[in-house]
Length: 191
Image: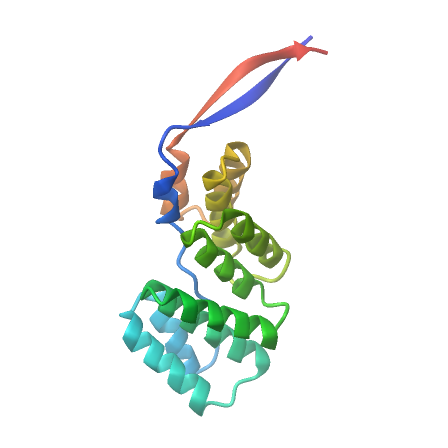
């Protein structure tokens, strides 16, 4: 009896993938400047404007550890969007120190490391974060898929892009990346 193995081939260059990382932000409930910081990150406000809002939230509001860490992640995402990688990483690191189980902080560190072409470290950070609570698991799977894609782990990348779409069918970036793969079947060895 012959089995069939699925082979997946990437047809587009992976350099494109690094520019397609998911937008990193953490949902924040409540009112006030911390919520405004989240909205700035979520709506892709001009980074400097959003950073100023987040700065005020961190300086002026009484936030519990989780909300403070989430605000740091949102500010870090805005800094990352503005090209301030060192400062963004400092925010993600500070979030982890405050809330060591904040999965979004690890995933966002991974996204930043992807942009720096540090794929092994990026994948480790993303995997660590995915073992925790995430605001948007679909984005975690998408970002992990990007890391795997860039590392030449196409089967795993394909599976994670698909899983991201199962969680969020409207995640256009994942469906666009899947179009870059060709899935074929080949006869396997007799069993």
